[in-house]
Amino acid sequence: MTNRKVELFANGMEIARRAADEVVRIASEAAAARGAFTIALSGGSTPKVLYALLAGNPALRNSLPGIK
Image 1 (cartoon, one colour):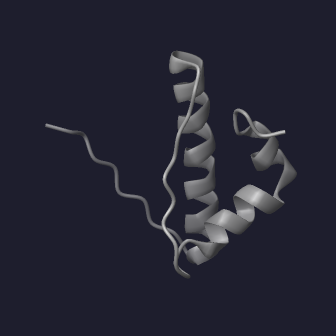
Image 2 (cartoon, one colour):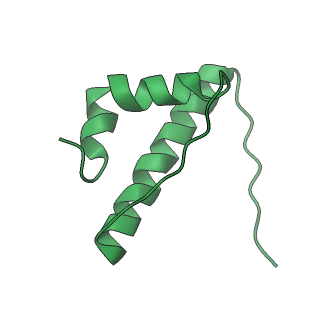
């Protein structure tokens, strides 16, 4: 059985920030373990804040493996 963790957030920005941190963490772990990281991202308006954070925040963007 998988251990599950429930997290509560005050607003959409907090959710997007947490998601961005998780993307960076998982990407880094995958690149270290396998030498590469691949992600498929959905379209639409729901993930726009996440994408804006990943693209517009230099600390997050520079933490993604393979991004220069």
